[in-house]
Length: 115
Image (cartoon, rainbow, N blue to C red; front, side, top):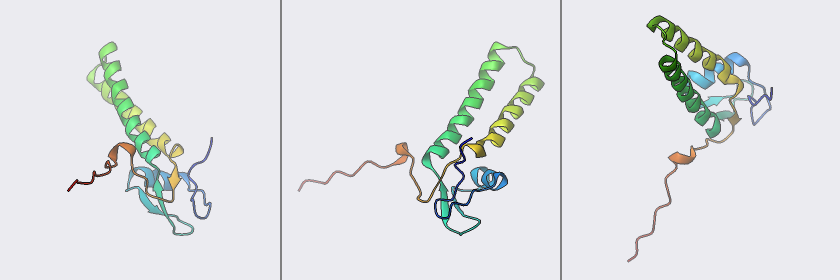
């Protein structure tokens, strides 16, 4: 698997627990454990995390509708799917040395007023 958890400044490969902590439990800006340089989750990684969450919710709703599951089974399925995404997400994160904005979040350039 391609390892994208690499500091852009010193090349240090972040461990799985460090990547898990940085990906889920804190903001996107973190310091490298080795050199101290600021590292950010790429815009693509942040977008991907939201996509995973939506996909899990859609799968849960589809299974709930298509297969008549009890409430207990639905809760167990939901917890299992969220746990799987939670544990696999650090393998997909990508670090960058600059704070990238999400494409949809950028402001359009202001138009100059005519006098």
